[in-house]
Length: 350
Figure 1 (cartoon, helix red, strand yellow):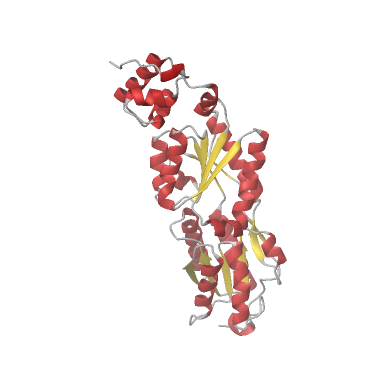
Figure 2: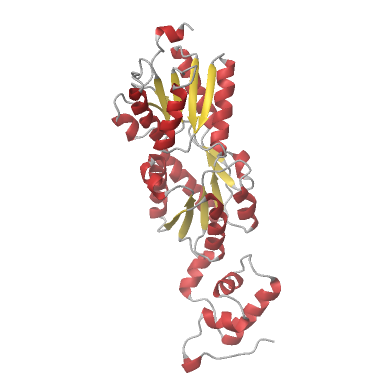
């Protein structure tokens, strides 16, 4: 039996009064009154009884946070803040998200996190009624977020191939098809020794691209190699140097983002190599960076702004409990520019 108390001085009852009477934290009260996972049935009943005894109910502002109105979308990104500002992909992707949120009078709750923190961040957002749903990015192979966040009932859209997304609706780009096109293009130019600088190996799309790169190169009889980096300019430069110092120097390199490809131009110059006469470079995620360099960078282009908008529109359907299916967006297409050309004659004849 919960003992009824009245706040001192006749002041308005608050969530803290309910928490004190029930012997729990204010966040537990929020979880219980909005019927979210996170407290036991016995504790929930004790909290609800305390609320009834005190004549307390969530105010209108709290009700708007309970899912009755679509107000906030969460996005956690495992990137250092300084690096995120330099990476054009996420700037375009977030712009696409905001274009949809603005039409719905909704806000974006963005957090930069360490990978091991992300599950708890999403859990706190959802169970604390701070968001209506989330966008999950940078899906990993056997991603622990999938089971943990589906278990708490978080409405979310996963940005990645359905094989990585578990029960979540997913929106993805066909990385395998695009990678195959890039390799086929370089082979058509006459390159027989090619390399790739990938993002982190644990990322699902890195694994998909790596597999497609190897399969296509083997099918075409090419010599190939993949070096792992982290999308940063520093590691992109180091990976490029290691390839150019190898016994069998590649005549063409594909980079998993535009930033690493841009830094490779400087590395090539260090080695006295002319791009594209001595070395061809091809970037993923075409951006203004690729078009401002000299020579301009050939790239795999896709509409990242529209990708972000598509993901967000899909999330709204999920949050409204509408029927929605996972789907692919437009396959990235090759845009040849000044950084790719046939290999040197002596290399092509080997």
